[in-house]
Amino acid sequence: MDQQQPTHGLRTLAIVVFTLVLIGGVALAGYWWGIKSVSQPGQTQTAAPKAETKSETKNIATKNEMLSVTAPTPNQAVTTPVRVAGSSNFFEAHTSIRIKDANGNVLAQSFAIAAGWMDKLYPFATNVSYSRPATATGTVEVFEASAKDGNDQNLISIPVKFVEK
Image (tube, rainbow, N blue to C red; front, side, top):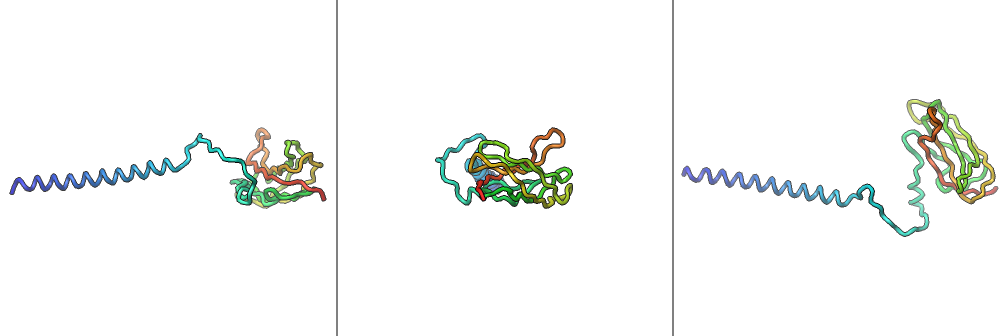
């Protein structure tokens, strides 16, 4: 009878160890499977070029933590002057605006003053007139000019199509 107790204890220990190893293996396999299913940084994926779709237009960023642009919308047909509107939280409420053609030529530079700053996004809106573009498409850029060095910060670039009235 004394010999059965150590055997019973070894069996229980073996079952516990086996269960822990099994659980650990399942957890490790799940972790490995999750890592393999996520695209790793630095990997490039190639795809054939395709025509722009509505879902791709929706993927154009129109907001970030400090800025939300509601007009113009991505790929909107615009005429001069173009209405630029949204909400921002920039230093002294100054929201910079630049319009470029597809060649990168600056057609207009302007600004809007938001209704406030410092604690949340405040609305802004203005009409910006631009010179005649050399291309049929371009961008409306909305951003904050850095008070330190003038560099663009929190830039949102909205693609547009230029049309004549």
